[in-house]
Image (tube, rainbow, N blue to C red; front, side):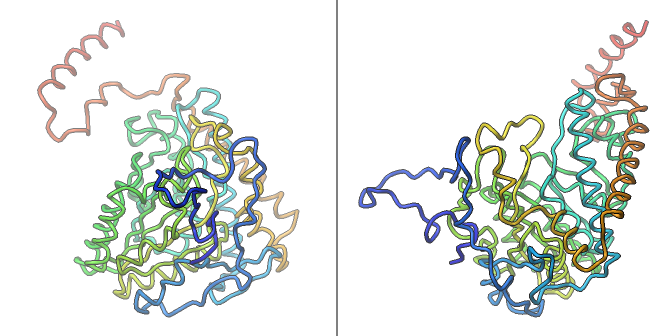
Length: 431
């Protein structure tokens, strides 16, 4: 059993009275006021398990579910068999995509605090997962994301103004304010509508992959969930279907250590790894350093090739840390140490990629400054343009009657009555 990420010997926390049966309730290793100590996490010295042929039998990847695929050393150098050999231009594009993601998060968080939008969720520390995964896929592949994968849209060139209009729920929002901010829906960019209930899209994503195979296309599906939702039935339904029908899809588990305020042990994270759950279903499995852009890219590339060649689905666990709160409604200082994210032993994904580029003489302070200035202007201009169309603190510009539209194919009678009543009230209000 791997010791990576397991806080207790052999993954078990033994009761002092081990001869007596007692209910065990998992507790996180650190609470507010504690000094985080990650010495129990073993950083692999050899960086990663070997890279097998993508078409190997699934059981030959069982060790990969317990190890940790890495490419970037902390000194900026690359090591191991998983190096995808990307050009410096591609890496600079990746750094820019991740930097845009972080700058957008910072801007929209501030705007939420100013009352311009009702809700926001940051993806700080997880940018490499969404950006690298997307850049390793084809444009025709459909991605079923959760709410912390806005990097997918950034990497696929979705206009920032369109995303911000959705956040502001204004008349520029294609969803007409019907969805919670950050629950984007951009089919043209291969981005399936985000579900606020994590886990529900797992079986939908697998079904999409099955449909791709049934139609004989070269496209695949990729679906995301958090580690907490692996405890839900949808996760197991998805793995069962993916295994039975060899669905061309990738099942991504983002293990950022926390499901809202519940640490990953509540989802049985103190036992085997989350990737290992695919082993029992006969699926290929990989466990990857989610803060290593190149490792995520390489693992995605491997899984995508396997899916397109008829090898079936792969479960990938992205081992990372959620640096910020779950959302703007959450205060993480109530349940974990304030600096826990800063001492996470696998560092920050942007810093690590930037350090690598500097190491190979493909980045410097001047280029960093120029990029940050360009991004700041891009985010500022996009927001100003979006806010002109309305926000929570002004008029949204959305006709409230649209709340009755595009929800039911045939509007039920009681809602028809409500709509007519509302029309009368609205007309009276407008004079």
